[in-house]
Image 1 (cartoon, rainbow, N blue to C red):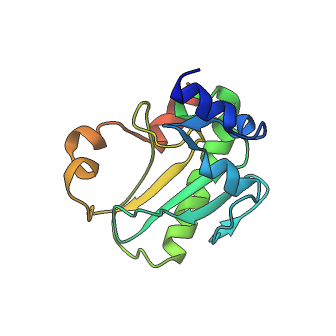
Image 2 (image 1 turned 90 degrees about the vertical axis):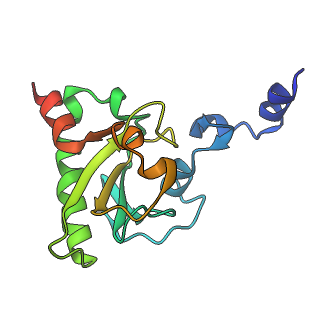
Length: 155
């Protein structure tokens, strides 16, 4: 058995429920299931909102649906109301955090640039405050606008 296979074999069976990404457990699924404590800014029966652990801007929140959805490319027409709810909650929460008149972008990282195999929407105030690969034009070109995703689901 190779090193990777033995690593997975050593994991508790329950980890299969959460999915793996880059040999790491899906921390968002663990947060949603209460396995990892998290400071929730907002929560309802469909979503929770947290601050990004590695913020790219002064205000950088994540809206995470409770339904286990792998990524934005996994969304179907039936998810349109969920995406709309995520956008509304994200806007309300980032405004409550004090984003003021800053421009805020709402969207999803697209594969293979998503870091967790659990759908999550970024709410990011402009301008970005990071340098290097996270702020590169190439990286942001892999960012799908939440409104564009919603429009595609509705078409």
